[in-house]
Length: 260
Image 1 (spheres, rainbow, N blue to C red):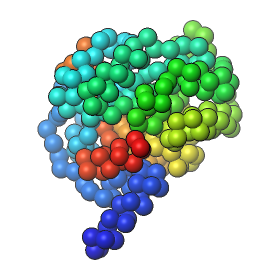
Image 2: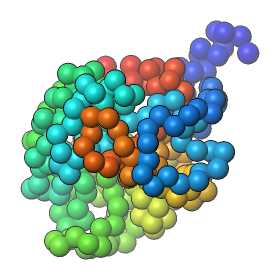
Image 3: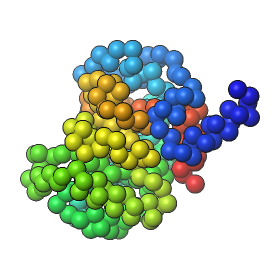
Image 4: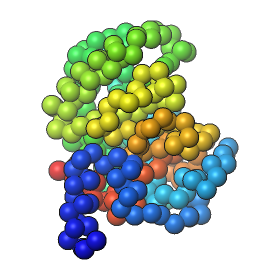
């Protein structure tokens, strides 16, 4: 393939949704030594997360005061930061975290933990009220998962209702922020509600015991949360660590395309 054709193909893939398949078609990555320590490492076989060049974290109030400059120097390339939950909760560390990530030059995205006991419009209103556009350099995230330990909302709607309210919430955020949201989900929630749906959205998947391709049926993913027991300089205690599906070159191109 000529350089011109390759460039056109790369641009088309970036504009079409940047799924893991599109990223991985462009370049493969070499096996690397672990970037960060893991207090409970899993054997992912040959498809272990350290094959990926771009690693990031997701944080909330439970992580304490993050030293963002130290995290950046340690190799953190992006951060998902909890912003809101339901229709009336805001993470108390959100403002300090997105400002710290911004100052350190770490691309960041706010995320919303979705409650199925509130309407999508109530939750979209709350998110928009509390998350300035400048706090969403990367696309905002909707976190959808079952939460059986919740003291306030254990409702499990049928799959059609789940997808309907998700779509309404995401449409509201896209209209306001100008970016198509990323969907974060867990194995059981994806299996129950999302298989075969939302193919034109980026997915951030949780998979801490096996590679996503083994447990997410036909799902092309862009981000993989592979541990909750990671050790990252600058982040107190244990933390979640994630990888981006493509190469570092793909990463910089994608960030440039979504942060305009």
